[in-house]
Length: 119
Image (cartoon, rainbow, N blue to C red):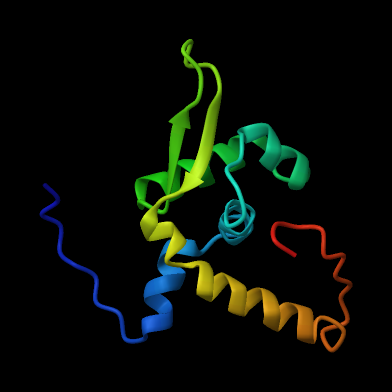
């Protein structure tokens, strides 16, 4: 049991961001919002992420209860990552962020290719 003092947040947005902060966690969650993924799927979708960093981000999301790793074969060699029920509860927030990005990317001077996750 964890007996450390509870953190107090001033803003509810900060509560959410405390779990999904980091450069790659939102993208990982977005990719998992449409289907289960293997580690290699993340590497393909995010080739600029170092193996070690991706592993750390996945472990943190798993420790926070947002994703789980499921063994898919009898030998234990194929593992998929999935959103947990807790992680799936973030879908509306992720969709809102995605829609905002789709709407405002030009105003920000960035290109959007629409190839990640659930488009």
